[in-house]
Length: 214
Length: 281
Image (cartoon, rainbow over all chains, first blue to last red; front, side):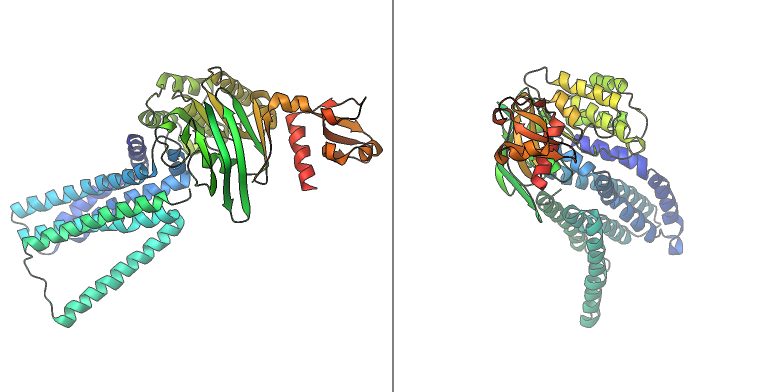
């Protein structure tokens, strides 16, 4: 797996070094673009989302150069290949997430943002960063990048439009209100569920990739 | 121990079926897989490497069952695929570091020597290399971790004759160690004729012949004659023929040749072409 990680590290540097500039811009925008001198939600989310999709982009590059097949001729299993992509995704997303989480914590300590909002935003970033690759990677491992991408887009539309709409509708119909400020248990649950989904996604990807004809 | 053994190995894709394939490559030997495009050479190699699951039969590679869990045995296998498959953006130097992290017995000075001797640019991205240089880089990668078995899919394709000759010499040197073996597929039959101890002919997924090369060359010959003489031969002895308006050539077993006839020595290329043509007729 060390070799696969190293190959991806080189690919990251070659293909995605502009992300560093983007991160700096996103950080600056986050600091100065929010309402009432509070940091913006959009830019951190967007940055975390993009960085969490680096693994997916690398997988597509692997397929285009057929490195995914070549790597299978080396001493590594398909489980190693899947695990490496999830670890790499976690590292890319984790670094970005930690950066913004730290920023929010500093801003909350300086009084520029209330602690409940800091906690919700940090957990939301975690959810976005874990759920995006958790949804996108299994179809890519199962069907390859061409077919997998179409299925992934379909799934995102379903999840965002279908599930989001259904929950919104339910809240409206039942007049349910989300507790504000959120309780620590709710925040912990909101953080735990994406982690569990990410782990389930890894397990599904392993199973699907092991059964795929390369 | 045999380096490779397959028993009734089969794989079906739609209307194409490979096998049943029965091959044995003894340690220290080189086997050439010869076949036209789509004959099943790459499929056979993929089955041996566990990239594809067989529909029937079994294979062992260096004594271990071929399949997806060959991690340990792959330390001893060097592979060059027909398109090599290294990441597009990496240079030969970076690729050396990646391979060093993958193989326990990686020999960086040896890798660098191969790159130098074969004139492979070390600072250019893999995607910008010519097909020949990509292949040479793949060969350097496959040879630099003290493998006991090389599995090579069309490794000399795209190389100019001079480099091809050098590469063939490198492969020959590799098997000086009696523990080292090579399975090589190629369209360039002349390379295989120089290199191989065993030749396996694949045609439309079927194994037409698998024999020691010297034995093939001893056992078969070409009879050059007129069409009347050809028609007079027992059809069972004629394994292949080539007809022109003025003459005929027939591939026959030497022991089945009519008494007193002179047979021309057959080359592996002629043997393959005539066998396949006969099958097509």
